[in-house]
Length: 381
Ligand SMILES: CC(C)(COP(=O)(O)OP(=O)(O)OC[C@H]1O[C@@H](n2cnc3c(N)ncnc32)[C@H](O)[C@@H]1OP(=O)(O)O)[C@@H](O)C(=O)NCCC(=O)NCCSC(=O)C1=CCCCC1=O
Image (cartoon, rainbow, N blue to C red; front, side, top):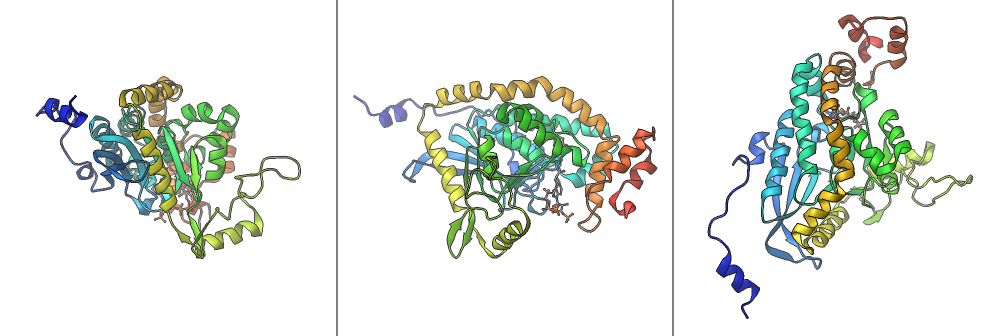
């Protein structure tokens, strides 16, 4: 009987059709701000497998916490299409450079300086954003979000569109929408209720309070969490988060909540003085890739397609309405909120005086340029 190798050698065709939309490097579409790397797939024993790879799609905009510009969104759509069509790729690892941020969402500088006040332009941007989220949800390969740091705003949304998330435990998660002039309708309002229930989704999507990776694991937004802080060469859990007990004296769950007061400050000092090492994160990601490799490919894809449906159906039901509303929202609250963030500083703050705005609207004050300018953090000082 012929061996599998002999059969492959005898029957594999000499020419294969390229199903990619365009034949250009992803990096060339965005000055290298999105990188596409095919890394050898590994078996569970860590040995590389000949001819099989995992596609790493990497946001490379660290100065702006790996936020995505319009060009980065275009490149990401094509990167996921490339990975989806590449016969050698078995899984996708979606991540960012560095250890501070996976992604903090849309680029607030571009939002404030180009899209603010231009709903017709933001509508076209949101076509691209919607296609990016759909490209993740429609990828024929399993998608792992390697959470290398904070996952905020649209970063949380594209992260939740992935099939698996593995995070280091210094990463924070959360939305920014209603604090910065937007609404988390770029996926979070579709995915959060499905993933963590309506009550916790409401808390995250409206109050915009960040939460730890340990809490994200407890809520079910991520599949796994690993330490990244080393003190004297030894990995330790995030010292700003409660990880040494589950309940408080009243029986309430406190595991994963942020410490407070001096304990939080001491934890911050430990992180500042410690060493950040993402080797356990990479080990956990490679382990997951190896498990995914050890399956029938079509059965894996079918399983992904079915298990994605709760998120995908919610997303498909709302994404076009969301796009239209977000575009028009660029006339008032988004224009105000993103300008405030972009023009604000640590000293003036980066958010408007929400009470002052509400007081003005309560007496029917119209949205004028003067009102928007008066709400900028520097003007309020
Ligand atoms: C809470 C933060 C994520 C972290 O805060 P902090 O640790 O205090 O850092 P900062 O001093 O705020 O930021 C450090 C520098 O990074 C720049 N930065 C941070 N985030 C972005 C971003 N998203 N785009 C561009 N630049 C960013 C920041 O300006 C600082 O640089 P500088 O030179 O000014 O010193 C906090 O950073 C934060 O809240 N960031 C913004 C989060 C945000 O609002 N994202 C957009 C949300 S809306 C969105 O993503 C959407 C997606 C699609 C659907 C529609 C939509 O709205």
